[in-house]
Image 1 (tube, one colour):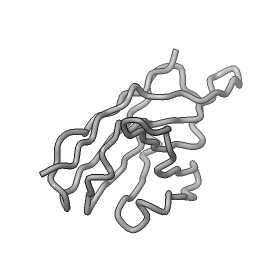
Image 2 (cartoon, rainbow, N blue to C red):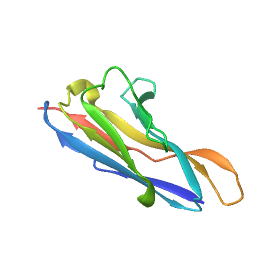
Image 3 (cartoon, rainbow, N blue to C red):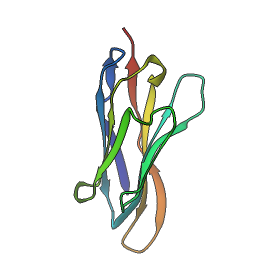
Image 4 (cartoon, rainbow, N blue to C red):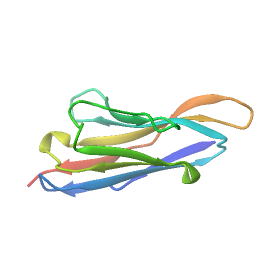
Length: 120
């Protein structure tokens, strides 16, 4: 059994910063891709950014230059540093990880989400 737990969400003023964390625990042998997604009210879930185990990174165009994704492989954790936040960044942020267990079975796991609200 694998669990992903996000933390770090909250209320922030426009122009402010937040740092999200997502830690995985359980039967983990290998974590390949880690990523962040978000879903705003009334909208579909969208990609924010991903990072492979080797460090290759992709970002959505709307966050490039403002958000930074990173990972700590020893702690099975992915981070999202969000700067220059805008009201349109308001959403529930979810982490996703592609995890292999000790018998070679691989699948995607999602966290339950953490709410980020950008408002004055």
